[in-house]
Length: 90
Image 1 (cartoon, helix red, strand yellow):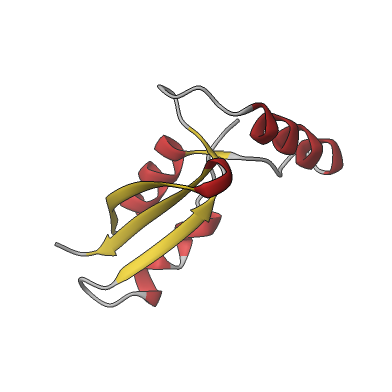
Image 2 (cartoon, rainbow, N blue to C red; image 1 turned 90 degrees about the vertical axis):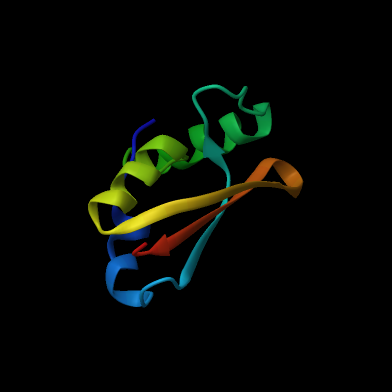
């Protein structure tokens, strides 16, 4: 389960300095047990296309940083989803 810059690639141009960008959905976290439903969803996506699937939070954060977008906040949401808040610049 890897990372991909796709969801954050445009973040450096979409958000102005200090403005927020939010990603929402199921993710894989290294130190957190992944819900069985999320693992099944990941397997279903990958069975259709190996490039699809859940992304690792750490990989998304690293990809964002490479595009000038900093990780600001993580919030647990309903149904085993996460809200990841990013900001451009300082």
